[in-house]
Amino acid sequence: MRGSGGTEGGVGKFFLGLFMAGLALYLFIDSVRVTTAGFGLVSGTMRRAGGIFGETTSMAIVFVPFFLGVMIMFYDSSKKIGSWLTMLGLAVIVFEVVSRIRFFMNVKLTHFLFMVVLLAAGAGLMFRSFRDETANQSE
Image (tube, rainbow, N blue to C red; front, side, top):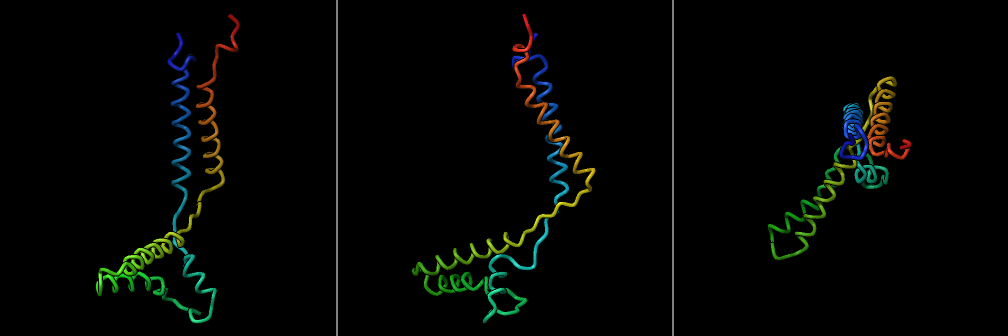
């Protein structure tokens, strides 16, 4: 009797492979650590530029467009420049925060090899479940 995929046991192999690949991906994601760096893209560029920004520990300059935008919006809400500066300031702040994120993988080699083998075996079983077994059999 053939399964719904046209092969005997194809569904079982697929879900076993899916489980193995899912477990490998979980172990991989679990071994990645997320941290932040000292400077983001905007603040790092201003730091390297020297000049008036020079060596600074406070990167409050990133908040200037947002601050000016909010100030203009409260002074005269009909001016579009206040809304534009506020949106630009928020975009710069979000971009700065995201550019500071760093990913590090902290895993032993044996565990990494186990994850790779588990992922490859799971993918192989999933692909094997799609293979047409009737083409290889002589009837």
